[in-house]
Image 1: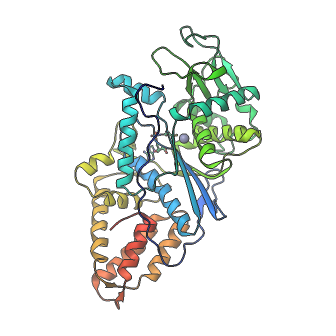
Image 2 (image 1 turned 135 degrees about the horizontal axis):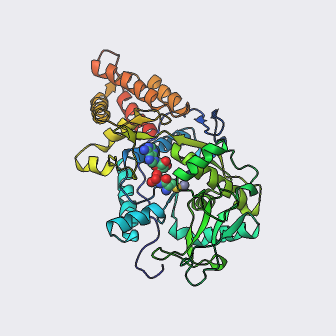
Image 3 (image 1 turned 90 degrees about the vertical axis):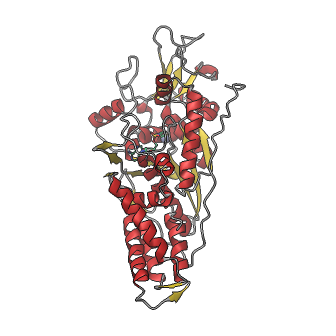
Length: 434
Ligand code: 5CA
Ligand code: ZN
């Protein structure tokens, strides 16, 4: 909405300093959700990563933070292995849950999105997460998304579904647009789920299997026509409306990284339908190639629970990073609490998680405070090997714990500069500033 006074450009955050380390990290292997195998997701001198960004209707919780810290480790490990990393991400700054929350709380949806996107940037800065190189919001990406949807309609891979009475503004005859999943012969290969599971997850996670007029129950929305009380943008032959969710990530990944790219990441709740659908769209919009490709490898972080259930904005069982920070918790202790769990495991946040993070932070800080300390070479090698092996942060922490214990015991032959090497390694590789 030009002229509305809103700045639609999604603002990123300052990059943390990454200290230089002696030597080089190992080739990085990660778990590919599609095959269940460990793969070298990026071989050449450069690596490309797309991590699905937030829907900004509530503050960053520990679950989000765990996911972004996990992919931050991947970027750091790639860099340490000598690869040039390009990282793209999005902000879903217009979507159903955001609009619903805004209506329920009586705030303008744009104010809510701007406020929560800014808070997320603050939280990521505090947690030492490297910012994306390309960071785009759904709203600012409407023109290329609309063009991609028009292309899919023209190619017969998408079709219109008639609207209910009262929808569609001045052009009610133009329907919503859905992708036809049968247009993509590779559909299903990202998640490899059976039809019944796909249908169940689709209904649970924002899909509409029951919508009348669709060709296939799993067909996802590409363009939602104008509805009374909902924001809408003019979009050529599509008519006024707003973009569907999955096409947003396909188009933003293409804009930021080109297609195909190396890794698409997110929490495991995004595997289906979101990553299945966005990859399918990417195959069909790949520079006009019907047999293009999206991400070569899909990587997923486990889900963090709290009080017995997945921590989620819709359930409201949340621990906010910003609240912990406001209580005076050291952000690096939060980061250490997250890193104590392997990124792929589902785990539960408790008060003890934080206490442990704070203790580890304090122990490490005092262990690196002297000039001399136990030799750092083996520890650096262990941390590198652990991260290269599917980002095994708990193993990396254990290696540093052993070094810290030895350092504090003061029994090892002191090596000048060793604490500095550990401190820089922990900073560069784990993102923990001591
Ligand atoms: N905007 C979309 C992605 S395009 C979205 O899913 N936004 S979100 O705000 O709901 O989630 C942001 C990221 O946090 C996603 O990768 C999601 O999988 C992850 N996430 C959400 N809840 C948890 C949780 N409890 N534990 C771990 N990761 C989570
Ligand atoms: Zn996404």
